[in-house]
Amino acid sequence: MRHFTSVFDLPDMKDALRQAFEIKKDRFKYVELGRNKTLLMIFFNSSLRTRLSTQKAAMNLGMNVIVLDVNQGAWKLETERGVIMDGDKPEHLLEAVPVMGCYCDVIGVRSFARFESKQDDYTEKILNQFIKYSGRPVFSMEAATGHPLQSFADWITIEEHKTVERPKVVMSWAPHPKALPQAVPNSFAQWMVAAGYDVVITHPHGYELDPKFTKGATIEYDQMKAFEGADFVYGKNWSVCEDAHYGQVLNMDRTWTIGERQMAVTNNAFFMHCLPVRRNMIVTDDVIEGPRSLVIPEAANREISATVVLKQILESL
Ligand code: AN0
Ligand code: CP
Image 1 (cartoon, rainbow, N blue to C red):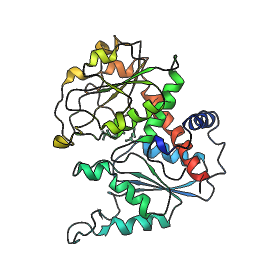
Image 2 (cartoon, rainbow, N blue to C red):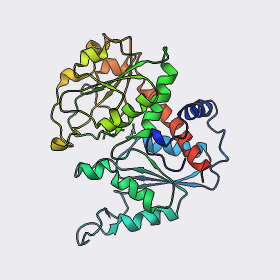
Image 3 (tube, helix red, strand yellow):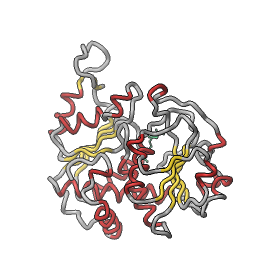
């Protein structure tokens, strides 16, 4: 595998899962694979889990790691071609990206949706410039429309906890005060359908995701109905995807906050969230602290998903 931007880049899903369990048993099994290879992680946005788990994954594989926070210490980057650069940005992405490629073997990029242009976000303009101009394999550490390392970790977590072959997995929108990208829910929906689960998505009217990512999932606008019989509940906020209100927050209805009321109608479901999470907006203290909460094991599995992805990229070098 050269680049990793979605589940469809994996040459073989089942084999990737097998490798995840293999690496979980022995994280250093492939420690020779990355010797004298350098990972460069580029962050345009904040991160706790992705930063730490991806660096740890690279260390599991014996790699060297460089981390760059573009907004802290690097030159501010212009991303539009044709701009007369007389403003506050001294460097263009079109030079910066190939320069970055000179110093490493693999590049991870975190670049959230900017909500300035849906077209730019949904064509993954920034991530694709890295793919096109860096000369290196590139993987998404959450780009504008997807967060595949997260969904892979979520999948590992569900496989570890499921008690039926094809669990009912319900992804629920929940309120949040700030506009968040659709990357996590897009990837989660796409990955869970690809995994063959019974996938239900529930959200208020106006929060429909791009059908490209939700194809194969059932949309249910009644949250309580959606939760009935769920084996896994995945909480997440996202902003509006639809063109006319793209990136807006239309609704902060806290009746959608996931609490005991909703969990009571599930099949004793596990609660999942990618983190960071705003308590008592997305989920109540009791549910996230409860015995069925998987938020910490999910975060732990980020190291595993990143190790598998980096391993497969290193094998292609
Ligand atoms: C980001 C998001 O919702 O995409 C990152 C989640 C992994 N969350 C925030 O910005 C709070
Ligand atoms: N879940 C996740 O990607 O977290 P960070 O934003 O902290 O990396």
